[in-house]
Image (tube, rainbow over all chains, first blue to last red; front, side, top):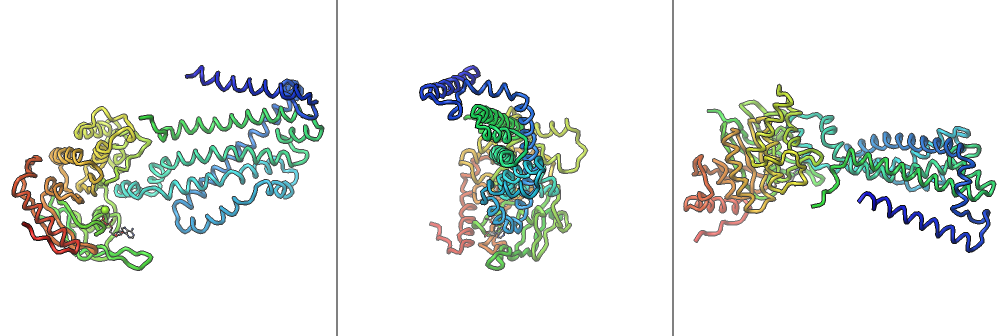
Length: 253
Length: 263
Ligand SMILES: Nc1ncnc2c1ncn2[C@@H]1O[C@H](COP(=O)(O)OP(=O)(O)O)[C@@H](O)[C@H]1O
Ligand SMILES: [Mg+2]
């Protein structure tokens, strides 16, 4: 299984690259029209230190934004999950907020806190990604069958014990499902802000510099770097899910 | 001899959006120490409410629920419960599921002793070799066995069973009845069994209480004619047939229908 699992996607990747190269070569497109895969590596190599530095910026901002979203989202989800009143009060508000296209929030935040690059980027990553977490936790908690609670309550367990022993672990599969969505959203948020903010940092900014100087190979190299980072982030979440909620995977019967 | 469980004149109404819903209306049930009472009645008449009162999960509007003569004021760890839904924790092994109450109820057992206790019970109900399996890997009947172990692992005085075998097929159910008798012999408890299976009530209990339709009161009480030693064959004797018939008529009355005249 393992060898096949590596070789098949790799072969697909190589074929994709070759077709792309062929397309550019056959049409005779110059570099300012369309970059070809063979141009990417030189572009990448030329800016390798910037890639490292800005890649790190993008990565840690995304992760911090996501962590804030997890803390806030879980807290909000708990409040809505345990209290019917709070659920009725907050849910419409939350849905309304989530309905706003976040791209419109980006310039607002960027203007509100001019120059605070790190904070602005983290803020957007957080704002864009906490919603699925809050909703999943609240649904997980509010749909806990009453018998689960009764089993522990009849033994004299406190609400805190019930939360730790049952409510929290039972919600973990929903939580990780939401986290997989949230990590992608946070990543989008980070890049949106980095592209929009002038004099910023991060891969988004590098992308924007490429655009300004019409350096197509650089722009495409950034895209590839972003794709790799996105994959990395996603699979870190998948690995965490395996560790903490692996029991929820249906064993084939 | 005083009764371990004493329920007198209990009335209770749930507050709902359409006003109060009277559920219990003058309920009397008493169970002597070591006794096993089955409660039958039309669906929705308030049987589960009764179990929640005994477990101290809620208080009645009126009347008294006493254990050992003391008014029940809140949950007591001397009670064990099992439901139709086995509510096992999917992320724990069967062994760890059974050990759960020992993590909550204050006790002096060492980790080793807790595990031994759980293993002993699992062996008693025929789940030896399944200790490390997850609930999702077990059949419905096996899950119910594990749920039963969890209900008695902390040696509760009172065991409350709310339609525990209701979702099982007839053969599995009969297996579990026999397991239940074996458990009762090895792990003495005072039991309340809610059921809608009249044969089950006769096979397991020494007294059957029929509740009226909602709001429920005690409509009929029958002492079971079978002794401590019981086999499934005892369910096919003329005496049992007569007892079943009597119960069936009482249920029909409880449902608000005139009893059919027996041929
Ligand atoms: N928490 C509750 N709030 C309002 N009504 C309830 C509640 N629990 C049960 N009921 C209602 O009370 C009645 C009796 O419920 P229950 O004791 O569960 O009946 P049974 O177990 O005999 O089927 C039912 O009509 C049910 O809908
Ligand atoms: Mg019920």
